[in-house]
Figure 1: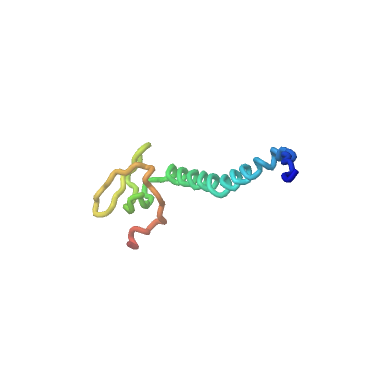
Figure 2: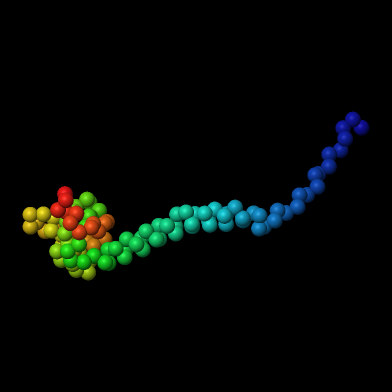
Length: 106
């Protein structure tokens, strides 16, 4: 015979199931600790700050409006934005509470 017979290669063993899913578990753990957990902390701090707003606080809204809190209700706040002009904003739009006296310095 000029051609040798071809035989099937021996069957490879099954990979370890733990090693198969280990990269997925590691990726999920990294995703949780690098993205999800810090975002939850920022959201919690932002909500705590918005609930702690009091009359007389100086705040900056998401639109960049700076003003002094004149009136507070459950969902809305009223800001004095200068010259006796008052504007109504949703509480959720407040981004930062400024230190007292900041508006005078502007």
